[in-house]
Image (cartoon, rainbow, N blue to C red; front, side, top):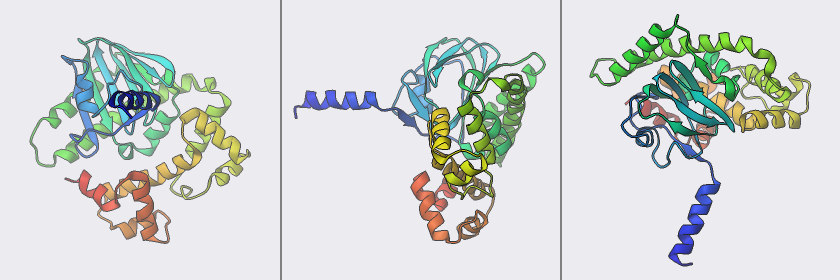
Length: 303
């Protein structure tokens, strides 16, 4: 094959796939933060991914929380147009297909990327139930100051050399994420009746995945919902782009990461606590899904 033919074929393959971004290596304990204004829109590329432009359709392995205090950013998320404007919050969920369409270079605000295991279950449930059109929220005057102040303190801490810096960042982020999840929860109550059948079934399924059921099969949840396994899979796939099995495994890996991150329990203790009878099987499954061993994950986020 000639070089030009090879390059053309590579470009076609690249165009056909949806690239998935991993979190930037500058993240501290699973959290990374970028402050606007940006002198170059493609600075997003430098800060938040390694190989693609934010203006190309892609997915992210992590959550993105955007707080804009000035300007605008227009996105396409799961085939819907969403606009982030002055004093607005946006949450992008892991693996949603999205791209930036238009960007005001004079925009001001914060972009925060967060590894999913750091999101508390109560907040995660709220975010996962949001439809693309509901993922942008205008902040009322009542909450302007406290949310902006928390984001600013988080940004300040990133640039400082402090004892217990990671713990301070974690605490500030938890304050931030609980505050905004409360706002989205209040907003969600107003539009609760707008979900279609697939979205309702998916929301019920995701609420059912607890630490007591995350080792169950898809048929277990289908039976609880009084539907067939194939129908449950179809609904979840249509709504989220991923299968029931993916979300069950995702829940298990998230719980495992939390224990590895927040406790000093060894891998054997954690695997038994999660319901695995064989800790070596747990370690193999963890590596297969996450791409790293439990101990390498722990060491990476505790550096």
